[in-house]
Amino acid sequence: MMLRGLRILLGTQRSHIAVNLTAQKSTLAQVENGAVSSSVIEKLVEICGSKDVSTSTPVREQHGRDESYHHCEPPDVVVFPTSTEKVSQVARLCYDHQIPIIPFGSGTGMEGGVTASKGGVCVDVTKMDQIEAVNAEDFDCTVQSGVTRVGLNNSLRDTGLWFPVDPGADCTLCGMCATGASGTNAVRYGTMRENVMNLEVVLSDGRIIETAGKGTRTKKSSAGYNLTNLFVGSEGTLGIITKATLKLYGQPESILSAICHFPDVQSAVDTVVQTLQCGIPMARIELLCEKMMDAFNKYSNYDYKVTPSLFLEFHGAENHVDDQGKIVAELCEANGGTQFNWAKDMDERNKLWKARHMCFYAATSLRPGARWLATDVCVPISRLPEIVVETKKDIDNSSILGPIVGHVGDGNFHTVLVVMPDSPEEIAEASALHDRMAERAMKLGGTCTGEHGVGLGKRHHLVTQFGQGGMDVMMQLKQTLDPKNIMNPGKVLFTD
Ligand SMILES: Cc1cc2c(cc1C)N(C[C@H](O)[C@H](O)[C@H](O)COP(=O)(O)OP(=O)(O)OC[C@H]1O[C@@H](n3cnc4c(N)ncnc43)[C@H](O)[C@@H]1O)c1[nH]c(=O)[nH]c(=O)c1N2
Ligand SMILES: CC(C)CC(=O)C(=O)O
Ligand SMILES: [Mn+2]
Image (tube, rainbow, N blue to C red; front, side, top):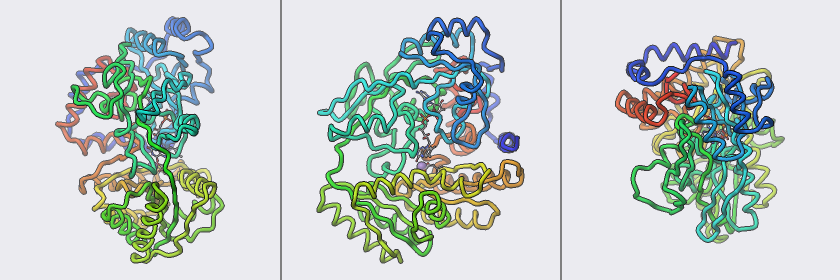
């Protein structure tokens, strides 16, 4: 109920937006609320088979929300197609009847991307779960939409290759394409944007395309517009991704991890900037503030010092890794860092990074019964110290608990703003903190979202970031690719 209040609050801000979204929206078809008719459900059964179509309440509810604070809005029906051809037929049926289509990967999104605010057909792509090709000599692979990043890496284990992009959750790789995801390794290996070579996409009217050209899997291409990166980060609003061709990397010969504790956030972030300016090819460099360290210790049963800390990792040849480690240890020390703890053993390292990936749950467990708003701003690396310090001050001056964790090597950090769902005051305070953070980032040449995407909760920030010209182009692209406004309506853009 109160989370609905949060959305109403965000909705209020919409009315202050100067950009003329109403005029743009009127060129797109309006999607009305309305249950999917029984004749459409019969046709869905004909296409997918009865066991792959569900209208049961638990299945619909399970598909009506992700891991974010946005409340559950179930679709009318969930389908589990087993081939691209079936996805195409489902899309064509929805197109003919102007029914919303909501693509669903594993539901681990952070911005309400899978909520069915206009009802419609949820297309759960997880039954298409084959790794179609691993071209070891070319360092690439092609996966269907249901393959997850952990699933892919498990099957690559004996090849000497791996796929490094690692959001904390074990989500689908095509979901990661859809949100433009990244994670702790992006500082070294890039985000999904740099690691997708080709996508197979089903468009709203059922047409099937390959975004880089049929079967193309080259490292580079100047052939035409970059359709691949148009679909990366499109959050299901332009089409359904049914296959992805991804870059692979050699598993590092040697890996070294470490944790170092600092007297304050400023000195930790200064160390990050200096490390990168020295050209050290960090594989991971993550910041946890003292509140997040406290949550981390409690949740994962560690006993680290409760001060702002850096989690570091080096990949490469053994002698390089050792040398780099020594240089960074010296930089840490020069900035007041203490207790540089090395984790060389594989089990110890895996445990540590698994716990780092659980930070979101650690933070939200600090207040039983609470909900949360996760922020995701990203700035040029030189501006990182000032934004982290200002943001921390802003949170400390508020009544909101907001531990910070970040992929600071990319200039990207999160605050997990923990709020009680029955407190409109806390919810309002948290969204005001979020708005100030996004505005601060944008003023510094940053973005409102580095990796989680826009979904429902950052649409007003997107408008500020892009202004009239950018929003016009996005609306025109949406109009061209989805003229009936059936692809995940109301996500990314205010088209609902
Ligand atoms: C504990 C924890 C930790 C993290 C994160 C989550 C959680 C729970 N995330 C967020 C999340 O894992 C990330 O957004 C994934 O890319 C979502 O993938 P899903 O398969 O779960 O997509 P999910 O099903 O949640 O869908 C997300 C969006 O993509 C669309 N979509 C999904 N599959 C599609 C397809 N095949 N075609 C078209 N559209 C599709 C959906 O419609 C929706 O809009 C994250 N993220 C990150 O970038 N970095 C991080 O560090 C973390 N960390
Ligand atoms: C909300 C976040 C803490 C999840 C995430 O992106 C992360 O752990 O890096
Ligand atoms: Mn993250």
